[in-house]
Image (cartoon, rainbow, N blue to C red; front, side, top):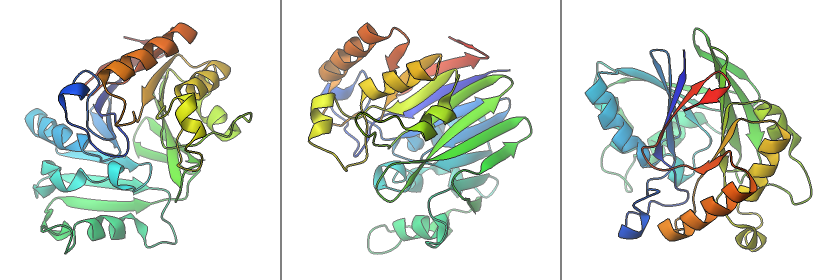
Length: 279
């Protein structure tokens, strides 16, 4: 009766495979949550490629995919998600920021259309269900699992998620820009008393000042919100591609000096959530 969280992609903006990005990883946003025998996937950045291969290895034939939004770094791994090409598999794809704009299927189809990609969405022979919802809706993807949603401050809109299962709770809050001196009450309400919060910590404070309007936050704001909300642990996420392993180690050290319940997410890191405990 746990939520098993595995990070398959922790970068923002663009993948950065290099010798300087080995420890923390270079794949873009993708997080797997295993709740009972059900798999929930959050975002489809380049990390979903390796996740797909792992699902095949484990014999998993279905999953629900929840998108924060559809900027490239959160969807450009989907064409390489091997299980979607298997006619024996099925996937539900949820998005809460595209109602009235043609829906998420339109975006996924355009991503895999000429002249930018040679293989069309129709080549994916699995059963794909595209589910558009209004942000703020509570979703019930499987019995016993509740997924609450909330809007985020990001260009073109984005959605935060809170997964609740068997007394455990994990929040996925990425691609959001805070307003200095103000508390985002929407986020505060969503993450209240959560066991784990995965938060957009793209910039340092100095970087943030130069990038107002780009739609991202800082580790210091993540710590502040999580302490206010009595969160169990904070995972720093959506690392800037210019933050190599040395820079990331320094950021993690600074954050942990301020609050010991912080860690920087790494590609292929696994965290077990059991009620109010993590391992």
